[in-house]
Length: 251
Image (cartoon, rainbow, N blue to C red; front, side, top):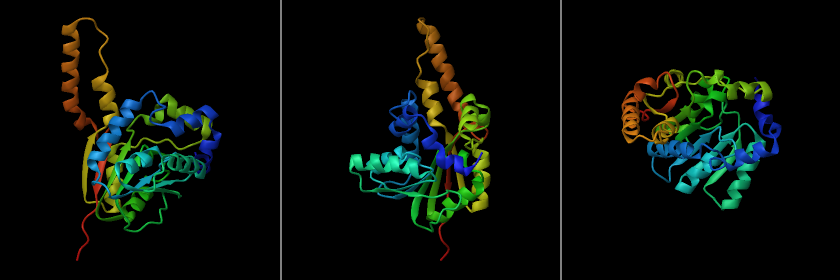
């Protein structure tokens, strides 16, 4: 696993895989779940036109979503090839409130410039998540927030993750909320909230049970609602959305 592999990742893809990456979330069968997750994240972010740094943005679909909402967005990724695809998408939509810059997100150069930082499915690619979170902390203004949406324990054992590591040499790590919060405390964040992963929640709740019997369908739906109530308890181990807040500057 190496950072050079992350830089080369986009070019190492097959052409159809690159098109899929560029077209997300609409090119993905799990599009409804991605949209649910972005909706949850937007509820946690400060209102537009706040300045957002989208860290590990890849081909930039999250950055473009935020820009369409009215945010001023800076998308960061280690791969210049990924960012070139993001720039092309941006020009196609004539969005002037989003820009992209190539940086290793474990050594961000920003200081107190942004109202919010976002790691969307990106922090688990870090070699050192503490360095990445520390960089996000420095980049935030007083009372700025950092929102993360990451996979939890078991991600590295997922067959798709293992195949990506074997084929591309990229970094895939478990990144549960407990690990993110530990890194956030070391960086200096003061308050922490953990929310259910809306991606999984959408998939779990809104998939129709495949039973003809109405009583069985109702029973399964009630069971799902009950499990939903227990989900927040499970987030410290499993994947979830973490919101960390920086304290106000001392005068």
